[in-house]
Amino acid sequence: MKKILGLLTLLMAFSCQAAWFAAQGQAPIVNGDVEQARDNAIKDGVRQALLYSGASISSLQQIENGVLASQQVALSGSGEIQGIKLTSERIEDDTLYVDIHVDVMPDSGQACKQQKYAKSLALVRFKLHNREQASDGGLFNLDTVFTGKLNNLLELHTHAFNIRQYINQNVNFDPNLLDARHQAVREQVMAIASRTDSQFVMLGSISDVSLEREKPSVFDLVEKQAPRNFFLTTYLFDGMTGELLDTRHYRERVVWEYSRQHQVDLSSKQFWASAYGQRLVKVMDDVLVNTSLTLECQQPIAKIVAVRDDLVQINLGSANGLKIGQAIKLSHNSSYTDQFGIPRFRQEHSAITTQVVELYKDSAVLQAKGSMPASNIQLNDFALLE
Image 1 (tube, one colour):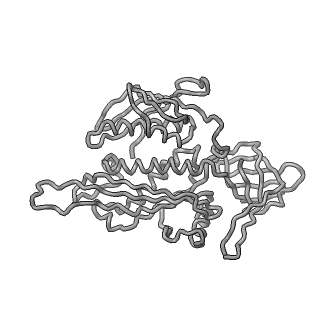
Image 2: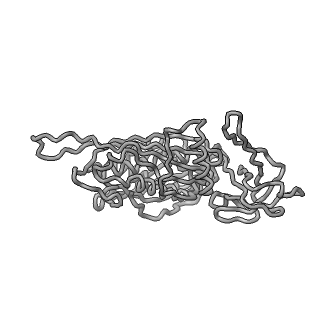
């Protein structure tokens, strides 16, 4: 995947609650398509500006409908990005570099309160089905490489995600078993969340990487290029309950530039600069935005991991956005199994209120306020962030 060059610079202080940021983005030029490379490079630069400013990742969707005219991107809608100006561009080694100014408007207060917290997430290596489809080009490790790069992308966006762990192994997840009443999947997801100390879990299935190559004719002097498919389905779960929160499908079809005999190097710059590699990068961007949108208003719930006198320790910390002195409510875990044998998740709010007195990256120590002791709270009860 393309590397980002350039250091973001704050151009001016906030004026009327808006600020201009300078950023640099880059994108490879595929099949001589400079216009597409420019669009990709601008989006690349915008992401850097959003990272620096702390704006919502969902704002990336705004530039999908942006129109580049007279070195100015006109945006529709009323999102956080108020304007993008292309100040310069250059081409080096089939790569287009752009310098842009991005006008970022902070959230107006209409967003949900939970958006300020980074959600703890575990990503599990996606499963590559129909592995015989990977033989053309030698894409047998595509699941590992793709998921690893996606994990790295999510880790960059620390204001939206607190990536607790990337599980680079096959966990035998079978999406065909997904059913509201299928307990095996729920238990599997909850076990992964417990193992990784995460509230949310993402799994995925790459079900199609087929190459639509035509049978060669005796009259063909040159081997014809053929389209290749990529079909990914992601599954986002609440690890506390095993509940499926969101399912997304990503289908791409783009020309495969390599010959029958060529075995691609999935770690090479050449592959990720190819038309197929660039389309996979686009899918990663889409997963990033959609996951952010799904989780941004989910209430962060921390587990109680230690109790001592009037102190309790939880498994969320500064990386999730907690602050010293912050007030946090506690609740009891009263999960039960209904008459159909299905586990149900329920919280009983406690009268105990606490505040953060010690803060670490992935945990915090809370002290009970008032005369009620925290000993009434048990391990694996919850702390609710509002």
